[in-house]
Amino acid sequence: GQTPVTVIGLGMMGSALAEAFLKAGHPTTVWNRSAEKADALVAKGAILVASPAEAVSASPLIVVCVLDYEAVHEIMGPAGGLLAGRTVMNLTNGKPEQARKAAKWAAEQGADYLDGGIMAVPQMIAGPEAFLLYSGSLEAFETYRRELDVLGASNYLGEDAGLAAFYDLALLSAMYGMFGGFYHAVALVGTEKVEASAFTALVVPWLQAMLASLPLQAQAMDANVHATDVSSLYINKIGFVNLIEASQEQGISTELVAPLQALVDRAVAEGYGADGLSRLAGLLKKPK
Ligand code: NDP
Image (tube, rainbow, N blue to C red; front, side):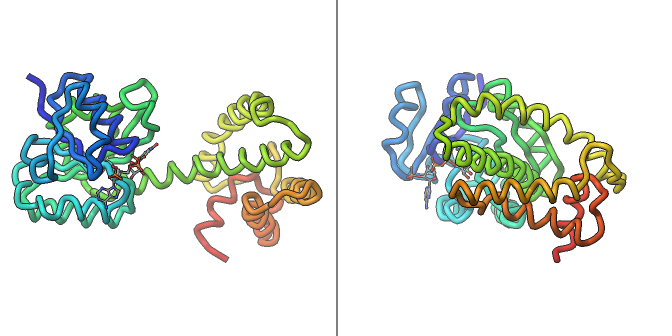
Protein backbone atom coordinates (compact mmCIF):
# COMPACT_ATOMS: atom_id res chain seq x y z
CA GLY A 1 0.00 0.00 0.00
CA GLN A 2 0.85 3.67 -0.11
CA THR A 3 2.95 5.32 2.62
CA PRO A 4 0.81 6.89 5.37
CA VAL A 5 1.31 10.65 5.55
CA THR A 6 0.43 13.16 8.26
CA VAL A 7 -0.36 16.79 7.50
CA ILE A 8 -0.23 19.26 10.38
CA GLY A 9 -1.80 22.63 9.58
CA LEU A 10 -4.91 22.86 7.42
CA GLY A 11 -4.86 26.45 6.30
CA MET A 12 -5.25 27.21 2.62
CA MET A 13 -1.96 25.51 1.79
CA GLY A 14 -2.02 22.62 4.26
CA SER A 15 -5.51 21.65 3.08
CA ALA A 16 -4.30 21.55 -0.52
CA LEU A 17 -1.33 19.37 0.50
CA ALA A 18 -3.57 16.94 2.40
CA GLU A 19 -6.02 16.75 -0.47
CA ALA A 20 -3.21 15.94 -2.91
CA PHE A 21 -1.99 13.08 -0.71
CA LEU A 22 -5.54 11.75 -0.40
CA LYS A 23 -6.07 11.88 -4.15
CA ALA A 24 -2.81 10.00 -4.68
CA GLY A 25 -4.12 7.25 -2.43
CA HIS A 26 -2.05 7.87 0.71
CA PRO A 27 -3.67 7.15 4.06
CA THR A 28 -3.67 10.75 5.31
CA THR A 29 -3.88 11.79 8.95
CA VAL A 30 -4.54 15.45 9.68
CA TRP A 31 -4.44 17.80 12.62
CA ASN A 32 -5.30 21.49 12.80
CA ARG A 33 -5.64 23.87 15.76
CA SER A 34 -9.17 24.67 14.60
CA ALA A 35 -10.52 21.19 13.97
CA GLU A 36 -13.44 22.29 11.78
CA LYS A 37 -11.06 23.05 8.91
CA ALA A 38 -10.65 19.28 8.52
CA ASP A 39 -14.33 18.66 7.72
CA ALA A 40 -14.03 18.68 3.92
CA LEU A 41 -10.91 16.51 4.06
CA VAL A 42 -12.52 14.00 6.42
CA ALA A 43 -15.41 13.72 3.95
CA LYS A 44 -12.78 12.73 1.36
CA GLY A 45 -11.21 10.08 3.59
CA ALA A 46 -8.73 11.90 5.81
CA ILE A 47 -8.29 10.72 9.41
CA LEU A 48 -8.70 13.60 11.86
CA VAL A 49 -6.86 13.25 15.17
CA ALA A 50 -7.19 15.34 18.32
CA SER A 51 -3.55 16.18 19.07
CA PRO A 52 -0.19 16.76 17.38
CA ALA A 53 1.14 13.74 19.31
CA GLU A 54 -1.46 11.45 17.70
CA ALA A 55 -0.75 13.05 14.34
CA VAL A 56 2.97 12.34 14.69
CA SER A 57 2.37 8.74 15.79
CA ALA A 58 0.22 7.99 12.75
CA SER A 59 2.85 8.22 9.97
CA PRO A 60 6.55 7.94 9.18
CA LEU A 61 6.32 11.20 7.17
CA ILE A 62 4.99 14.31 8.93
CA VAL A 63 4.32 17.35 6.80
CA VAL A 64 4.00 20.64 8.69
CA CYS A 65 2.60 23.77 7.03
CA VAL A 66 1.49 26.53 9.40
CA LEU A 67 1.77 30.30 9.81
CA ASP A 68 5.39 30.58 10.97
CA TYR A 69 8.20 28.80 12.83
CA GLU A 70 6.92 29.94 16.20
CA ALA A 71 3.75 27.97 15.54
CA VAL A 72 5.83 25.01 14.29
CA HIS A 73 7.73 24.84 17.59
CA GLU A 74 4.59 25.40 19.65
CA ILE A 75 2.88 22.47 17.91
CA MET A 76 5.81 20.08 17.54
CA GLY A 77 7.62 20.75 20.82
CA PRO A 78 5.34 18.62 23.03
CA ALA A 79 5.38 15.80 20.43
CA GLY A 80 9.19 15.77 20.18
CA GLY A 81 9.60 12.51 22.10
CA LEU A 82 7.56 10.68 19.46
CA LEU A 83 9.61 11.80 16.47
CA ALA A 84 12.48 9.32 16.62
CA GLY A 85 12.81 7.38 13.36
CA ARG A 86 10.32 9.60 11.55
CA THR A 87 10.78 12.35 8.98
CA VAL A 88 9.57 15.89 9.52
CA MET A 89 9.02 17.83 6.34
CA ASN A 90 8.44 21.46 7.21
CA LEU A 91 6.86 23.51 4.43
CA THR A 92 6.28 26.60 6.57
CA ASN A 93 7.74 29.83 5.18
CA GLY A 94 10.73 31.06 7.16
CA LYS A 95 14.33 32.24 7.21
CA PRO A 96 17.35 29.99 6.55
CA GLU A 97 18.45 30.33 10.17
CA GLN A 98 15.05 29.18 11.42
CA ALA A 99 15.19 26.14 9.15
CA ARG A 100 18.68 25.24 10.43
CA LYS A 101 17.51 25.52 14.04
CA ALA A 102 14.49 23.32 13.33
CA ALA A 103 16.78 20.75 11.66
CA LYS A 104 19.03 20.72 14.72
CA TRP A 105 16.04 20.28 17.01
CA ALA A 106 14.67 17.42 14.89
CA ALA A 107 18.08 15.70 14.91
CA GLU A 108 18.08 15.92 18.72
CA GLN A 109 14.76 14.04 18.68
CA GLY A 110 16.25 11.37 16.40
CA ALA A 111 14.18 12.51 13.43
CA ASP A 112 15.18 13.22 9.84
CA TYR A 113 14.41 16.76 8.71
CA LEU A 114 13.60 18.19 5.32
CA ASP A 115 12.78 21.85 4.88
CA GLY A 116 10.76 22.92 1.91
CA GLY A 117 9.62 25.96 0.00
CA ILE A 118 6.41 25.76 -1.98
CA MET A 119 6.60 27.65 -5.25
CA ALA A 120 2.90 27.44 -5.94
CA VAL A 121 -0.42 28.71 -4.66
CA PRO A 122 -2.77 26.09 -3.16
CA GLN A 123 -4.75 25.74 -6.40
CA MET A 124 -1.55 24.75 -8.25
CA ILE A 125 -0.62 21.91 -5.85
CA ALA A 126 -0.33 18.55 -7.66
CA GLY A 127 -0.66 20.39 -10.98
CA PRO A 128 1.88 20.69 -13.79
CA GLU A 129 3.26 24.13 -12.79
CA ALA A 130 3.82 23.55 -9.08
CA PHE A 131 7.40 23.15 -7.94
CA LEU A 132 8.86 22.75 -4.50
CA LEU A 133 12.34 23.37 -3.13
CA TYR A 134 13.84 21.00 -0.58
CA SER A 135 16.94 21.04 1.60
CA GLY A 136 18.19 19.06 4.55
CA SER A 137 18.40 15.28 4.82
CA LEU A 138 19.25 13.77 1.43
CA GLU A 139 18.26 10.37 2.75
CA ALA A 140 14.80 11.65 3.63
CA PHE A 141 14.47 13.29 0.23
CA GLU A 142 15.38 10.06 -1.54
CA THR A 143 13.22 7.89 0.72
CA TYR A 144 10.12 10.05 0.22
CA ARG A 145 10.74 11.25 -3.32
CA ARG A 146 7.58 9.57 -4.59
CA GLU A 147 5.46 11.21 -1.89
CA LEU A 148 7.04 14.63 -2.49
CA ASP A 149 6.43 14.35 -6.23
CA VAL A 150 2.70 14.11 -5.48
CA LEU A 151 2.72 17.82 -4.57
CA GLY A 152 4.66 19.12 -7.57
CA ALA A 153 8.08 18.90 -9.19
CA SER A 154 10.71 18.33 -6.48
CA ASN A 155 13.99 20.25 -6.47
CA TYR A 156 16.61 19.20 -3.91
CA LEU A 157 19.11 21.97 -3.17
CA GLY A 158 21.53 20.42 -0.65
CA GLU A 159 22.09 19.15 2.89
CA ASP A 160 22.15 22.63 4.46
CA ALA A 161 18.56 22.79 5.71
CA GLY A 162 18.51 26.58 5.21
CA LEU A 163 18.85 26.46 1.43
CA ALA A 164 15.19 25.92 0.56
CA ALA A 165 14.13 28.95 2.63
CA PHE A 166 16.94 30.99 1.12
CA TYR A 167 15.94 30.28 -2.49
CA ASP A 168 12.25 30.56 -1.62
CA LEU A 169 12.70 34.08 -0.23
CA ALA A 170 14.75 35.12 -3.27
CA LEU A 171 12.07 33.83 -5.63
CA LEU A 172 9.37 35.59 -3.62
CA SER A 173 11.37 38.79 -3.94
CA ALA A 174 11.28 38.49 -7.73
CA MET A 175 7.54 37.90 -7.56
CA TYR A 176 6.84 40.86 -5.25
CA GLY A 177 8.87 43.15 -7.50
CA MET A 178 6.77 42.17 -10.48
CA PHE A 179 3.52 42.50 -8.52
CA GLY A 180 4.62 45.90 -7.17
CA GLY A 181 5.14 47.24 -10.67
CA PHE A 182 1.77 45.87 -11.71
CA TYR A 183 -0.02 47.50 -8.76
CA HIS A 184 1.50 50.89 -9.51
CA ALA A 185 0.54 50.54 -13.17
CA VAL A 186 -3.07 49.63 -12.36
CA ALA A 187 -3.34 52.56 -9.92
CA LEU A 188 -1.92 54.90 -12.54
CA VAL A 189 -4.28 53.93 -15.38
CA GLY A 190 -7.11 53.81 -12.84
CA THR A 191 -6.82 57.59 -12.49
CA GLU A 192 -8.16 57.76 -16.05
CA LYS A 193 -10.90 55.20 -15.31
CA VAL A 194 -9.17 52.36 -17.15
CA GLU A 195 -10.32 49.07 -15.63
CA ALA A 196 -7.64 46.74 -14.31
CA SER A 197 -8.91 43.82 -16.38
CA ALA A 198 -8.74 45.70 -19.67
CA PHE A 199 -5.29 47.08 -18.89
CA THR A 200 -3.96 43.69 -17.79
CA ALA A 201 -4.51 42.38 -21.30
CA LEU A 202 -1.63 44.70 -22.25
CA VAL A 203 0.50 44.07 -19.15
CA VAL A 204 0.76 40.33 -19.62
CA PRO A 205 2.33 40.28 -23.10
CA TRP A 206 4.56 43.21 -22.12
CA LEU A 207 5.91 41.43 -19.06
CA GLN A 208 6.29 38.21 -21.03
CA ALA A 209 8.48 40.03 -23.54
CA MET A 210 10.51 41.64 -20.72
CA LEU A 211 10.93 38.28 -18.97
CA ALA A 212 12.88 37.11 -21.99
CA SER A 213 15.58 39.66 -21.10
CA LEU A 214 16.34 38.06 -17.72
CA PRO A 215 18.71 35.35 -19.01
CA LEU A 216 20.63 38.00 -20.97
CA GLN A 217 20.84 40.29 -17.93
CA ALA A 218 21.98 37.31 -15.86
CA GLN A 219 24.83 36.65 -18.30
CA ALA A 220 25.92 40.27 -17.96
CA MET A 221 25.73 39.99 -14.16
CA ASP A 222 27.78 36.78 -14.05
CA ALA A 223 30.44 38.28 -16.34
CA ASN A 224 30.14 41.67 -14.58
CA VAL A 225 30.12 43.30 -18.02
CA HIS A 226 27.22 45.72 -18.33
CA ALA A 227 27.86 47.48 -21.64
CA THR A 228 24.51 47.80 -23.38
CA ASP A 229 22.99 48.31 -26.79
CA VAL A 230 19.52 47.90 -25.27
CA SER A 231 19.04 50.90 -22.98
CA SER A 232 21.41 52.80 -20.70
CA LEU A 233 20.91 53.63 -17.04
CA TYR A 234 21.16 57.29 -18.01
CA ILE A 235 18.19 57.09 -20.39
CA ASN A 236 16.25 55.15 -17.72
CA LYS A 237 17.02 57.88 -15.19
CA ILE A 238 15.54 60.51 -17.52
CA GLY A 239 12.50 58.35 -18.26
CA PHE A 240 11.95 57.54 -14.60
CA VAL A 241 11.42 61.24 -13.80
CA ASN A 242 8.51 61.20 -16.24
CA LEU A 243 6.98 58.15 -14.58
CA ILE A 244 7.30 59.65 -11.09
CA GLU A 245 6.06 63.14 -12.05
CA ALA A 246 3.14 61.83 -14.10
CA SER A 247 2.14 59.62 -11.16
CA GLN A 248 2.28 62.59 -8.79
CA GLU A 249 0.31 64.74 -11.22
CA GLN A 250 -2.35 62.00 -11.34
CA GLY A 251 -2.40 62.05 -7.55
CA ILE A 252 -1.15 58.55 -6.83
CA SER A 253 1.49 57.39 -4.39
CA THR A 254 4.96 56.64 -5.74
CA GLU A 255 5.94 54.51 -2.73
CA LEU A 256 6.35 51.34 -4.77
CA VAL A 257 8.42 52.77 -7.62
CA ALA A 258 10.43 55.50 -5.87
CA PRO A 259 13.00 53.05 -4.38
CA LEU A 260 13.84 51.73 -7.82
CA GLN A 261 14.25 55.28 -9.09
CA ALA A 262 16.62 55.96 -6.20
CA LEU A 263 18.79 53.00 -7.20
CA VAL A 264 18.88 54.07 -10.87
CA ASP A 265 19.89 57.58 -9.73
CA ARG A 266 22.62 56.16 -7.50
CA ALA A 267 23.97 54.06 -10.36
CA VAL A 268 24.26 57.12 -12.57
CA ALA A 269 25.78 59.17 -9.72
CA GLU A 270 28.40 56.46 -9.19
CA GLY A 271 29.40 56.71 -12.85
CA TYR A 272 27.48 53.82 -14.40
CA GLY A 273 25.19 55.88 -16.65
CA ALA A 274 26.39 54.16 -19.82
CA ASP A 275 25.75 50.68 -18.43
CA GLY A 276 22.58 48.65 -18.80
CA LEU A 277 20.05 47.87 -16.07
CA SER A 278 21.92 44.65 -15.25
CA ARG A 279 24.33 46.85 -13.26
CA LEU A 280 21.72 47.42 -10.53
CA ALA A 281 21.84 44.00 -8.83
CA GLY A 282 25.53 44.41 -8.06
CA LEU A 283 24.96 47.83 -6.49
CA LEU A 284 22.77 46.21 -3.83
CA LYS A 285 25.83 44.26 -2.64
CA LYS A 286 27.40 47.52 -1.49
CA PRO A 287 24.70 49.52 0.30
CA LYS A 288 25.20 53.28 0.07
P1 NDP B 1 -3.41 30.14 6.44
O1 NDP B 1 -3.50 31.45 7.12
O2 NDP B 1 -4.50 29.73 5.52
O3 NDP B 1 -3.23 28.99 7.53
C1 NDP B 1 -2.39 29.18 8.64
C2 NDP B 1 -2.32 27.87 9.39
O4 NDP B 1 -1.44 28.02 10.53
C3 NDP B 1 -3.66 27.40 9.96
O5 NDP B 1 -3.71 26.00 9.89
C4 NDP B 1 -3.59 27.90 11.41
O6 NDP B 1 -4.41 27.18 12.29
C5 NDP B 1 -2.13 27.59 11.69
N1 NDP B 1 -1.61 28.30 12.87
C6 NDP B 1 -1.26 29.61 12.96
N2 NDP B 1 -0.79 29.89 14.18
C7 NDP B 1 -0.84 28.74 14.89
C8 NDP B 1 -0.47 28.38 16.21
N3 NDP B 1 0.05 29.28 17.05
N4 NDP B 1 -0.67 27.10 16.59
C9 NDP B 1 -1.20 26.20 15.75
N5 NDP B 1 -1.55 26.46 14.47
C10 NDP B 1 -1.36 27.72 14.04
O7 NDP B 1 -2.01 30.13 5.68
P2 NDP B 1 -1.51 29.27 4.42
O8 NDP B 1 -2.01 27.89 4.54
O9 NDP B 1 -1.76 30.06 3.19
O10 NDP B 1 0.07 29.27 4.68
C11 NDP B 1 0.72 28.31 5.49
C12 NDP B 1 2.21 28.32 5.14
O11 NDP B 1 2.36 27.99 3.75
C13 NDP B 1 2.85 29.71 5.36
O12 NDP B 1 4.14 29.55 5.86
C14 NDP B 1 2.90 30.25 3.93
O13 NDP B 1 3.94 31.21 3.76
C15 NDP B 1 3.16 28.98 3.14
N6 NDP B 1 2.81 29.13 1.72
C16 NDP B 1 1.56 29.53 1.36
C17 NDP B 1 1.26 29.75 0.03
C18 NDP B 1 -0.10 30.20 -0.39
O14 NDP B 1 -0.24 30.55 -1.57
N7 NDP B 1 -1.09 30.21 0.48
C19 NDP B 1 2.28 29.58 -1.03
C20 NDP B 1 3.53 29.07 -0.54
C21 NDP B 1 3.77 28.89 0.78
P3 NDP B 1 -5.96 27.67 12.51
O15 NDP B 1 -6.71 27.12 11.36
O16 NDP B 1 -6.33 27.04 13.81
O17 NDP B 1 -5.93 29.17 12.55
